[in-house]
Length: 87
Image (cartoon, rainbow, N blue to C red; front, top):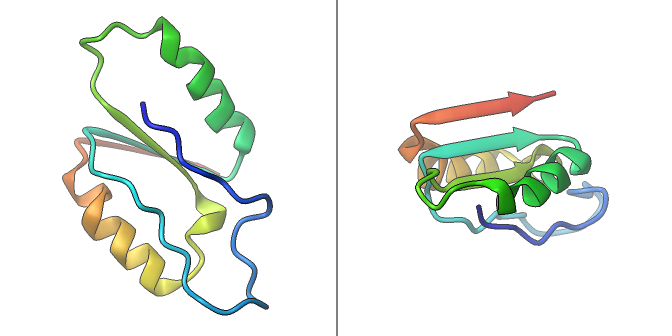
């Protein structure tokens, strides 16, 4: 599993610029609004066997702009074999 840098609170519509989550593709993608979900997966990483497929995790708060959603779908999600979204 690869960790991503997370900004508290996610995207702020009052600031300029587009937020891009720069991750490579992986067989499993997990999207959530909860940082606790991300922390739990990071903690569980040490329990996973080396044969476990790569995993990408992202906070949905960072996917608020149409361009950032489109780029993430194209670069990461389109290559996934399993996508899990937790609301």
